[in-house]
Image (cartoon, helix red, strand yellow):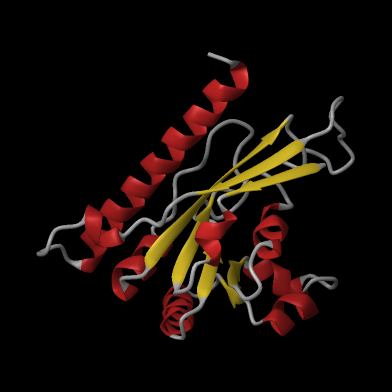
Length: 194
């Protein structure tokens, strides 16, 4: 598989924030972590039960996604320490076309912490290591995993002064989902030459 990362300089800028990415392949988190010397990650609780991965995720200090309030507090604490935290708001890998509806947990963390959101739009063409695909399913041509990091998004731009946290989180989640859908549509148009 070939990798291309654009805009890594945005992620490397100083300051705390949530790195928000869609999740087309099994390798997405590896690609993201490779660009950041120090980052935390919110990962599926099942990884703590995996014989091969439990030591890695616990040693790395990653945050399990099993406890909503605990997850939120742990992420806000890491952000308060000036760290960046990776989260995949779809909760699992993307379908072969498009993205899943974003969970609102990332938006709630952003609203409560007032941290910046660092979007990373990922594509893999031709499809490889995607949801429902066998790891032994090899495409006819070399797959290219592309990650494009954009300028940070400020959650405050999507909410009004009187919004309570749940309403603000819904607005932020909807706005960020639209951002990703538009960027993925643009990437698809560029790929097909339309």
